Image (cartoon, rainbow, N blue to C red; front, side, top):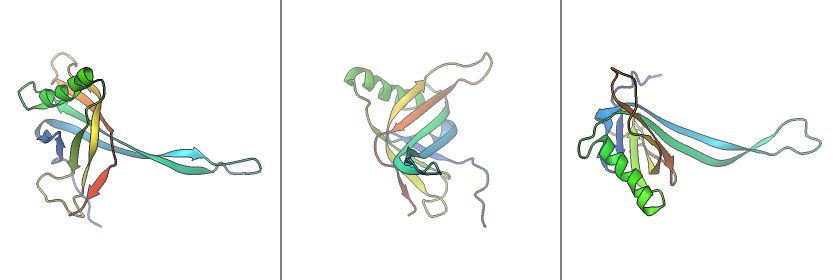
Length: 145
């Protein structure tokens, strides 16, 4: 069985901007709610699958330049403040930017909004890193072609 190898060439696009070159970590979280389904007389705690949940967490090297990390994320966050509703945007993520989308390099995509954004913070003498969580605003899809 082939193994993917080291995770060093991820492709992450947020709101049409490729932020891969500033991304130090990225995680796509997926889960299914577990609903109670046991009743009197059952000897097992049964579960039933509920709604799907997904989110994207990323850690970036901060960059305040136009069309870079802060510009993209702050624009989305600021729209929330002015509109009163989270602005929805698209994301795409795959393990290898270099390789084409395929069965061995699937691409996930969907609509998201910025749920958490820490634009500045860190320890003295370390790189300025920012963490962001994108919450699902629609279904998650995966492409293999």
